[in-house]
Image (cartoon, rainbow, N blue to C red; front, side):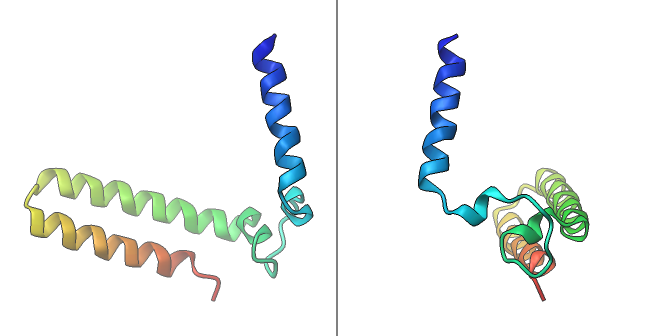
Length: 86
């Protein structure tokens, strides 16, 4: 019972601290926060997730530090490029 009360108290604190526009979960491609709820953004997010899984498997296959660092930086660049608004 105490866990439920603690969770509700946490949600209440978040409601007090966060701005009003964060409470809306309606997809809107023009809004900087609500664009995350559009189907196009979620599709791009799935591509990024697959990219990181493939990159991680490649890092496990080739555990050479220069390869891991280069692949990690390149994957980060691709992730930001895919998830960019424009």
